[in-house]
Length: 474
Image 1 (cartoon, rainbow, N blue to C red):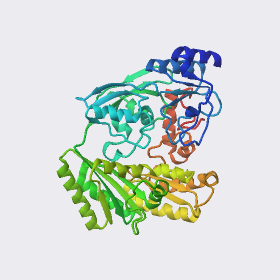
Image 2: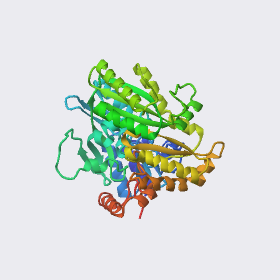
Image 3: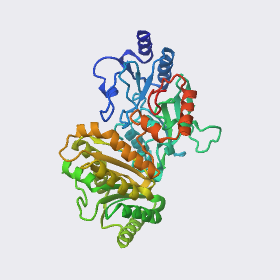
């Protein structure tokens, strides 16, 4: 049966695109190298029709499929298990920009398009696709939609779900659903698009999407501010909302220890106010506006004056050029890499209402200091939309691998219980994957889990799409 399936797959996509031998780590190992699986084969279709044919062949053979985009996910959601029975369905050859409709402010792209290429295609048309995240040079739009990716501009433009008008998708049975409408209003039954976005490849295989575009902003202003507390950062956020309105595009918070790792491992970067006494946090905020540069800058600088008067900002620098703004963003985006160079760590991608973040941090910082002495907290993230990367590093000079191995379950329980106590979510933008499937059972209500399982059973009754991802096998 296996040999017959492989022959069918080779006939479908070409023998060169059915990989069974050699180094397959690029497809079999997750981005963070937490898990290495073993695939029956890596299959690389070159069209939607080929995707559908591959899915039909695997369904007929009862062979599980693991859809995969750029393989940059952080929750082990696109990695095969070690059974050698699963087919990895790599979508990176589906990489065409099919159309740009400037009058409708939309574009249709295939699932394997690299996010950065989508951004560039929109820019070449004089428009903006605002989804932006650290892996944008490697991640694909299909994966972004499958995980409902967030990034740095959710505050203004929303998650990937809010940026998608329609999908093209292959069902678990190999049927094609063409939902590539560019419509912004379509109340004709259940919203299949939103059901499938964020389903992490468990309900269907996204092959293309119609995305929202926006006019390019005339003015883009960026500031870096040192603040005396997380409560002051939240106060500054409220002030920015009042005075910038919809122009407030990004609002990032970074703890001084997180920034100290950038200073340590990337000394070529200039980190404003690093180690500044009395300023445990720094904030990076951005305003994008359609008014003139002169008027936008005057309003932005007035905001910073008010922030100084209110005491929520101790010092600040406003970028004088696009190059300076990029340098500031580069510092923020370098925190994960600097942390990786510091050593293995326990990562958390959590969300709490912005108003409750100061209380959450005070509570959880004290809890971990008491229960895990010496642990170092690398806290940073998208404060504007309540999403923090609340990461825990091994004690200075300790064995990072041993710390991860021995402490991760306990630290996760402490952090996720605290998140739940403050009304938050244990996964804000990274998804559930297989890494957090057991966590979902603990924190999701039985009613919600029952509904999710009913949807999975209805659409994928044989459980062949991404088994064990999101929902544990029963």
